[in-house]
Each structure stands twice: as C-alpha cells, then as structure tokens.
Image (cartoon, rainbow, N blue to C red):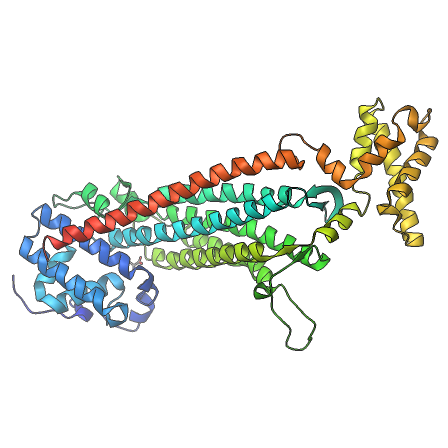
Length: 500
Ligand code: ARG
C-alpha cells in the first residue's frame, strides 16, 4: 500500500502517456454515451471483487464512494484520460488516493469497454423496439378505422388493383413485426456479459463472472474470454436490424409522399413545413427526412462492416471507431420511427379522393378476367379479351379525355366489343352483364378478394385482431425486459450500499 499519488491524467505515467497522438487516440468525448454504463460496470466489478475477497471491504467502500461522487459531479467534470474508463479510474484515484488503483484488479479496458457498450446498447435497442411497436400500434388503429376505405393499389407505381387502407397499413405492420423480431434477437445476443474476460486471456484472480453478469442484468456470460473482448457481432446485428427498420420506414415514407402528392392523404401541419418563398406551399419534409434515414443506416452498416472486416483476434483499437456507427444508427432510426408514427397517427385519409382514385385506370380488370375464367373461358383467353378492352379504353381516354378508363359503362361496352372480335360466342353466354358490372365496382372487387391475407374487410379485420395479439405479446416482452434491467439496477445499488 502507499506510494506516490498518481493523478487522473497519469494513471500509467511510466508508459506512453503523452505526445501528439494523444488526442487522436482519445475516445473521451464520444464516451459520454457510456459514462453511466461505465459507472455501473465499475460498481458491479468492485462489489464482486469484495465478495470474492480479492479486495477488502474497506477499500471497496472507498472506491464505491468515489464512484458516487464522480457520478454526482457528472461526465463534464472528468478531466483527463484516453477514454472514459481511464478518466473515471483516474478520478477515483484523485478522490481516494492509491487505494483507488485496486478498482482495475482482474480486468482490462478490453472487457470493460465491451461490457459498457452492451450495457448501453441494450437500452437503446429497447427504445428502438418501443418506437417500432408504437408505429405498429398507429398502423393497426388507423387500419381498424379504414377497413372499408377503398384505395388504389399499385405495381410499378401504376394503378393495379383496388385495395383498402387497412390492408395497405397492415402490410407495413407485418414488416414492422419482423423488424421487431430482428431487434429482439439483437437484444438477446447483446445482453450477454464479456466482463471478466480481461485483456482476452482471463485472469489469475478467483473472479465470479456470473455474479457481475447478474449484478448488471445480463442474461448470461460470454464464455470464451477471447471471443468476449473481440466480438462486435452484436453491434453488427443491432445495426443491421436497425437498417432493416430504416428500409421499412423508407418505403412507408415514399408511399405517404406519393399519397399526399395525389391528395389521398393530408399530413397534420406539425408534420409539414412551409416554403420561405412560395406562400402556398405545405411540404411533407418530415417524410423526406424519414426516407433519407436509410442513408444514415446504410452508412452506419457499411462503416461498421468495413471497420470490423479482417480484424485479427483479439482486441484492436479499430474497435473504438466501430462504436460511433452504432450510436449514430440507433439514434437516427429510433427518431425517424417515432416521427413516422406521429405523422401517420395525425394524418387524414381523404376517403372520397381515394375512392375515385381506386376506380382510375381500369383496376378491376383482373377481377373481370377471373370472372370469365370462373365461367369456363381459359384464363389466357379471358386475359386477352380484357387486355384488348383495356387497350381500347386507354386509347379513348387519351384521345378524348373522357375518363373512359374509369367509367364502368364504357368498360362494359369495351369488354363486349373485345369479346365480339375474340370469342366464338357472345359474352353473355359466359357471364350475364349484371355480374360483370358488379365486378367492375372497386368496392365489390375488394370484398370478393377474401382469400387468406387478402384485402376483403372480413379477412383484414381478422388479420388486425391477430396482429393486435402479437403486438401485445411483443409489448409485454419489452416491459418484462425493462423490468429486469431496472431490478438489476436496484440490486446493484443495494449491494453497493453494503460497502458505502
Ligand atoms: N476506448 C477503447 C475502446 O473504445 C477501449 C480501450 C482499450 N484500449 C486498449 N488499448 N486496449 O475500444
């Protein structure tokens, strides 16, 4: 015991502690994000060291007391150090003298930083999951109000077949459910403890890795000490799951931009912005920024991948640079998810504009061909008849601007005429005109598409009910995970209380 009191700026003063590269090496500014995590990791480690009698209770109490003071002073009070781990250790020594140097017994910054990143990221992943669940909730709630709201469905951005707003929204809810599953899997593999791995080769001290894992709320321990400090696959998995969310968001944003351009949807004013010069403008900029978030996520994913690629075992300083990609991605995607949920929840779907649009471009043509096929015509022949009618209607539309493509009477006449030139028998020998007329109506067309997963209101109503159950289960898992982390935090502070 004893010895000269080292200062925070020189806890390893006999080893390369200064020089022009010092700033380049430092991650201190970026480490603010893991300040709380590091304090928790330090506390759990010191409690375990005391329980294992590696450090005496009195020393543990002094170190833990210093950690409380450092927490109260806040991150900005940390003066020096290559990173937050070193800065906190230096501050502990500044507070209590050389005994503070016992804190780093039986560990390395390599296992320490990996533990801190996991500790913080799991919270961020839970926030991301909560945001995605919020967007699912908004989709299901609005969908339930619009089971019968007919809208145009597109392929290649061309009118294709009518569908409903509920069916459309449920399509994204399904994607967001899978996004939730991927984030949840990333959480599971993030919530494992590398602490106690040391630099990579374990330690000679009789540590208890299970105990620190438990005190920090981790589900399990990463067994192999070299794997534990080396791997950032949990970061890669989290960022890829988040990039997946950003892809889903970009599709929603693109659709909603298109829909507001067409007047199908009106965004609430708080999700739009104005022009500095054009007084009439209401621009859906929020959705454009949501669409752009896929760019951030893609940058994060690529940056992380390129940084991790080809790294040898075990710890390499490149890993320090990898972390910022994770924080940037999770922040960008979670915020964009919240904004999308808000924009969706407050937007108005303009039902009559949607209904008119659902009739445009002869979108019930497939249903007509289906009906002819159901009445004995080979589907290919039926397709030919209806395609010929559609061609003639489109020509008439282009030449006269009469809206023939959306006019059921004109459609019926065109089908009749096409049948006359292609079929051997008159059309009504296959299908009565009234039956055809019903098929041409977009609402009837939607109602008839009642196959599993189809847009018929009854089918979608059942799908929404199922989706609600799955969402409730996902939210319960989220709440349970949050509870377990909170319980671990309480336990840790009680255990710290034994010594302080
Ligand atoms: N700040 C570093 C990081 O974020 C941890 C330090 C480990 N440094 C070392 N030279 N082994 O990865």
